Length: 312
Image (cartoon, rainbow, N blue to C red; front, side):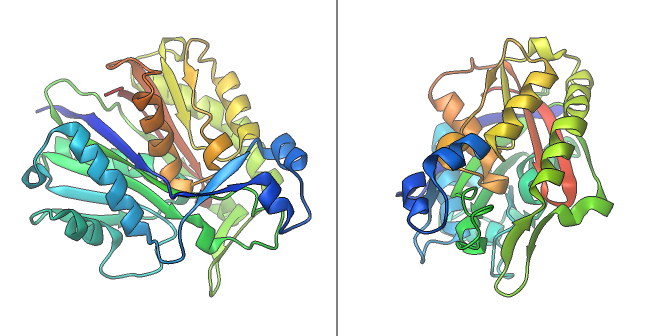
């Protein structure tokens, strides 16, 4: 096999929905203020006893069911998350146990909001190297647990959920080359620190970086895949903020693509946002099977990673 492709997708969101009016009863904000600044209307929140690995396993189970593979076919599990509290067993091992997988390699990756695209590249590279044949790649976050619900500048952003992809070896690559990197000296612009950990960011710094520096990098991802932005059928950026997603997509020039805007109903779910939004697009049939879709994650550490995939 010379590459890998995304065979199937799945997603999970908790039942509880927190609307903007609900937030307005908690902090000094309003539906109009939130929608005008970040474009979010609702977000899903996990139960107090609902864990990152529980949500990850739910999304993974759906992706596995959609793939038609047997549990024994999966030999690698990667979970991208920045909100796992427990260190060991890691989230990937816990997901494998919940699903009843047999002896897969299990690893967690913490690249915050760019975690899923880093994990997808890692799975692709591992499969290309012959060290795995079928991988579960999951982004899962319980962002609400790291949220300061008294800070109106950040609590309006965050949501919980998970998205998963089944990635398998393929003769014709369906996962394009990754373009990834970071700006370490500016990494403090997005933070989840302290005990208990709390999310904080320098909003204007992140906004300026994302809207000015990321569109050329996203175009480079297309070039590495041998495409122009006009060839894309879909664009799934990290769902950070609608006021970031829309200008980055516009500057990219993907004029024929469906642009994922799941942030409106799901909020910012960090590493879960890309697979969650992509799974919904595919489930609704908004992007044809086999069509090229740009995935591009960015955020914490001021890290970024992107690749073009063929839609399952």
